[in-house]
Amino acid sequence: SVAEAAMSTSARSTVNTLGVVGGGQMGMGITVTAATQGKKKVICVDSNAAALQKSLENSKRILASQVTKGKITAQEKEEAIARIVTTQDLNSLKDVDFVIEAVPEDPFFFICLNIHLFYGWIKMTINNKIQKNEKVKKSIFEQVSKITQNDVILASNTSSIPITRIASWVSEDRRDKVCGMHFMNPVPVMQLVEIIPGLQTSNDTKAKVIALAEQMGKTTSVSRDDAGFIANRILMPYINEAVFVLQEGIATKEDIDKTMKLGTNVPMGPLTLADFIGLDTCLFIQQTLYESTKDSKYKPAPLLQRYVEAGWLGRKTGRGFYNYE
Ligand code: CAA
Image (cartoon, rainbow, N blue to C red; front, side, top):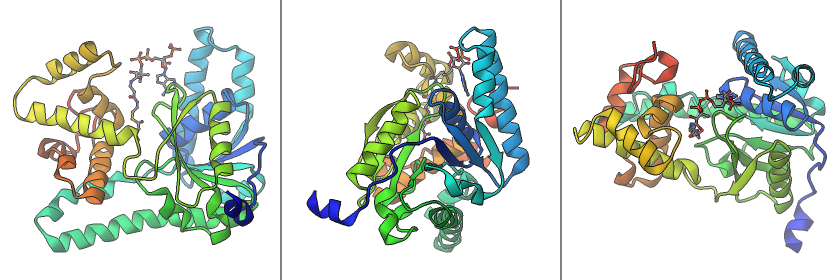
């Protein structure tokens, strides 16, 4: 619109160097995909040097196996690795053309969330912890918006914090350049990226976020800025219902997964997928849906809560609905 054009300056168009904040599974997945598919230089920042190194080594192993399988050449692998810089210093993002934040939404704080249904005072404590967790992201957005140039887009891979709230963490004249860019795990394999414009995101920014996703070889869908966006709004109640079916003894976990995998042609049954995503992450997103809508249809299954309390978080801990040792 004319009003929008008058208010907002256009975002930088050409992305040669991408900044990624967060070097975990998602951040490193985004980094590697941008370096291989998008042929971008990538600066990946994480305060935990050891974790960053570990996920980079992991990615190198996956690239090496792609060479073995003949999917990419050894030279393409080396060129991709050479495009990646890892660092602990946020100031390294000074000259990047585009930033994607992919800092984990620490589900640890949500493990006890269900308790608040019974004890109001615990709810207060937990809400404080949620706020503390958001504070980390807030601080990152505050810093990165100052470190980078004003025309640089700041995208977030969040799956649960409203984009409009994230935009409120940067100065008013920058909010048109904040947008949700939700990748799916494993990032190098999954075709889709959900694009979530916040209330203040400009059409120019949205178009440029879509363009970058496409340069990274992805297909996009657009969602309004509402809890769970599209993917998790639909996926999480589906996973939750599978847990209810298990909890109620309607079928074994194997039969639940077999039915959905072979009966609806998905690569993994819902309980296997929950283990893959992480049961704490599933619970966290379900709790976000429930908290923001207060609709009982999103209430997490008690069995899922018990598994998380037991520390059975899925593949990453060696045990979830299935054993992985
Ligand atoms: N990085 C790069 N490549 C990977 C990878 C990773 N982390 N994991 C698997 N791959 C590759 C493999 O190397 C293999 O490549 P080739 O075809 O070139 O050989 C290919 O993916 C298939 O892998 P596998 O043969 O090992 O196993 P599979 O066929 O069972 O596929 C899978 C594994 C891709 C994970 C598949 O099971 C799948 O698509 N599962 C569903 C995943 C899903 O739904 N993800 C979305 C979760 S929801 C989400 O992410 C949003 C949120 O906010 C929670």
